[in-house]
Image (cartoon, rainbow, N blue to C red):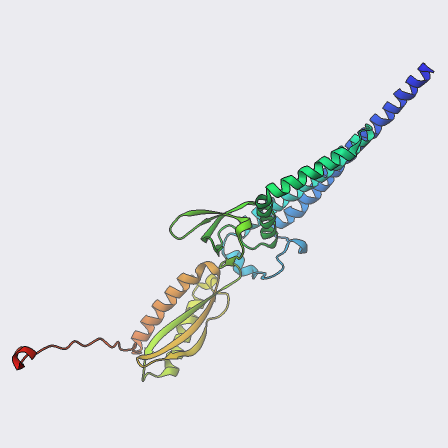
Length: 311
């Protein structure tokens, strides 16, 4: 009986060892295959072939406008790396946890106390690290939705400026004065992105009363059309400039308005160049600017009697 019992125990141990080995091999193979699938998926994202599941749900930018910023490859690379890191970490944790539980079960260990303890520890950790979990979840959502990327000009409420780095926990922003702000993703409630899609530039030109409005508008349209066709500025414009006409009328003069649709990074330079060329063209065509009303001062006559003299 002793020999038979020992043989049975040895056979059970061998079977248990084989099952544990199978569990480990299956876990490693599953992890490898899933990681490989994630790498292929995110590689397509980095190369520009973005799968539907990883595209932003709203506000898809025009491809030409986004490419013109020169930051498309960097944004895609960073987004792909972040998504790959998150997915691979989640896969490893899930597969590893399942494998450990199955191995402990094969060894005959009672899993109920362990699972209960892990549940209590998880609840305690969740309460203690709520802000950290919130930061990471918000960071993942922002990256998946492509709310902003490196090089974008954004307004995050707490800070405004240019994005220098996007992480799962924090976002680094450099403002106009060169100050670097580290903003926790969990504290970002709203995001105003000035670099996605296209930028609308409003150009107002003040003119005096009495001018030929039709001629001024025609000249304005001609100057802006020449700008849009300029080889050096052709990549700046997404659509042809549009002259809207008279925007305001005051006692001093009128304001003619035009709208330019440009790539985001060129909104300010396009406005400056347009105003400079329009001012030169108006001056050359004799289109005057509104006259300014300077305050007049009363000059007293030294020979006139003062109030004290009258008394």
